[in-house]
Length: 597
Image 1 (tube, rainbow, N blue to C red):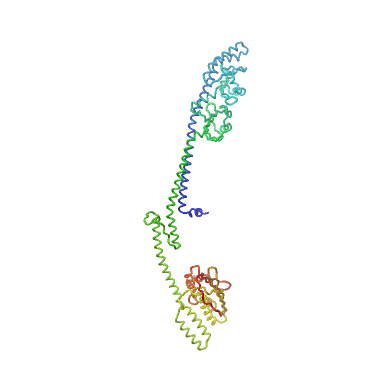
Image 2 (cartoon, rainbow, N blue to C red; image 1 turned 135 degrees about the horizontal axis):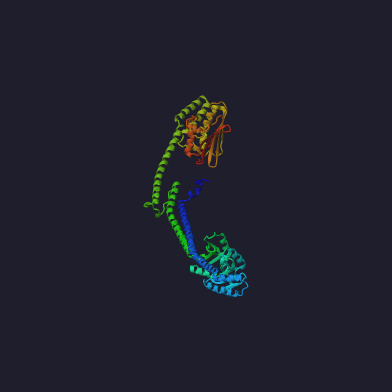
């Protein structure tokens, strides 16, 4: 499909619809730009929301890491404590001494000084190789951890500290490490140190200090796939998926719908222990004001666009009713009707805009065209009448009629009947040419002229001429131009018989069709050249026959009836055929009927 066809539908629309469509497209473009702007604003708001909450969470993680680092520092001091080193070494070296109880007492008393160095320490446990637990605080906290798994981990760490969560989420967190003998740098394991910490209080204090504590938020701390905080799960599978999809130490945010509720989610990883934290916050309260503002703007924009569209439509209708009236005047003028005069609202005489100028210019043009059309119509009538008279004058020699009457009288006097018949027929031909001033005559009169002409030719050519006339009954009352058929028969005889001794058949057929008549003149003994009329017009062929000429007959017919009527030449079944067509127009009720002998 070409570009022209693709745009044809638009080109065929009225000017009113084109302008209205362009306006609506402009409104649509503005609405799309507005929606994109709202989207950009929302994205910028989310980024700012992430930045604010991320800064708050950094305070939380920084607080957690500082407290954990302080507790680890306490453990560093404890493994280097001389009292603890000496007593643990004694217990390790003297398994059967009666002073072992005193040594455990000294260790217990020394632990007291470390218990209150951090408010988050819930208990300090020193586990001897014989599984004896020297505990400052509640000894039940140590039961929350998988000691068997921790023992192998502590062996691999060789005295370094590690943080671990309890068997169940939210049951506690501990800083664990081995106490090794420092004397002489033997580094032989003496005991295992467990400092249990209240991680729940530590996280709550961190959230409160950062201002992030709220009923609509949740903080989740995980070590790998193990949840450390809180005790109750919150979308566990989703949290695991976030951790598996997140890059190490990369902080990011996302918005997700969980349980038909939108959540603003921040994920990250602590720098100290590498634990993952996930922060959930209810998104709707955060974004409610922005969303309501956007909705208000949308409603306002829609109402403004609707009102503007209605106003523009009314204005365009007001403007285009004047153009519609102009189109109506043009159509009426084109169909020959007088434009209808509207009321005073359509007075454009004093209107100075383009519409007024168009109407005044068109009114002036129609007046000028009407004057020119009337003048041209009168001139055309004169030209047509002159042309017809000129064509008739070619066959109106009056003096020949008087001469032929004299010859006819002399032929009768001497008994020359053939000569008399020919002269009478020829006289009838000339009488028909000079009788009356009408160029349109009944078909019966035209066939009477043709009958006289055939009588002359039958006397001349005897049995060599065979003439046939085929026509329906009661058709002789139609009107045809004077001397239309006889010159065609004369032209047929001229080309078929004068230069040949062969017999010639001339057949005239008249038919009545739905909206026109056909008169067909066919003859044997000759054939028409292609483009005969054009060659005659360009003087390539000299017209012969009655003197009127085929070109003159064709010109008369087209002048009287229009370009679609006239003469058509062709060859058919070894015969040269001339087809004359005229429309059904006038009829005469009592036309003369031809009596063929």
